[in-house]
Image (cartoon, rainbow, N blue to C red):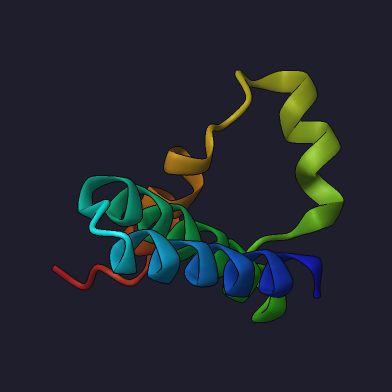
Length: 79
């Protein structure tokens, strides 16, 4: 629920920046909102197994938010 709230707030900030003609900043905020929402959705749909996070973190280099979003997008690639 915190990720969803964060997403909504980021969108509000993006809209305000857009209204103030700060298009590049707004686009950056909208991108952050999209990534946050993707993470929320992945957790909600149980696409990410939280029980394995500590094990993976101990064994591998930690993933960045971009890595997680890219892996979520790749999971649906049927090519």
